[in-house]
Length: 327
Image 1 (cartoon, rainbow, N blue to C red):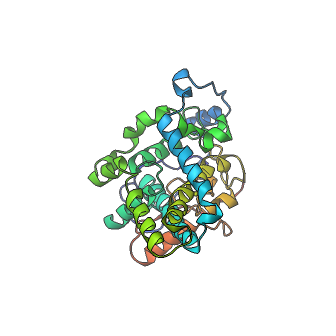
Image 2: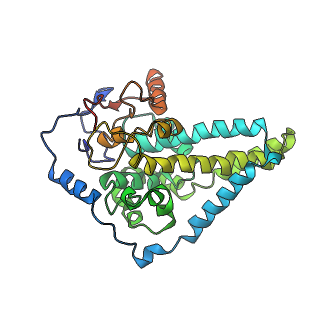
Image 3: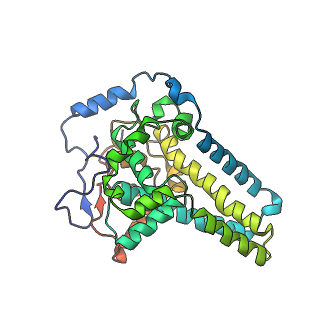
């Protein structure tokens, strides 16, 4: 099943019905010329990185190293506390939902519409993941859908699982220079431009608030313990869960649709990532707000969208039909 529409584009004009259905399986008689090119690209030989891309980016590499050291330190017995566990759980939910519901399904794919205040709140929640700002995140994701698992895909799974998982971000990638082509809708908004530039800033007041509470509430491990659990440990967990969608779900699991890429549905990634692990479904229907299409494909993010619809805060929701056959 080829991609239904160009990844990242807004809903077509006139598509105003709530829960509008995207094209179902079997709507096309055969692969398009683009599909044939994409399928050929899946097995094309991957050349070695050019010299300018082999050097590690010092800032990103150093940032990731410090966060992983902080995450390990958080697990030391001296920093354990139930308050730390609660802070981690609440902020994990906030951050992952901000990425899946805000940055991904709302901003990147416009799979539903939400009031401006809610859209910006969800985008801010996603920015707490420190995965760059909303413009860069959306631009790279839309680029990925256009060239999924092709030689010019920045986290091309055909180059290896480690590359797709996280190595790609430690190197210079040409896709960074293409972001402006995919984000005209977001670059018009001053709020998103500001958030894209200062996406690391919200961690400072968050860390100060946690430190102050930990020091004055007698939490075991003190303020430092709370900060370590809520920031580096949380970020490292969210990073690897997000990266598993780029790596594991392009290698492990089953396929409902014959999309021209390596995407697969992986149940355990879906649980960790609030439904993003139903990745083959998503690549077959990028603009569907619902990723889990079979009865057993539980999609936590979709349940949140249903709640928003009940509250009247989600409209023009686009969904896909359940698959008719498996591949």
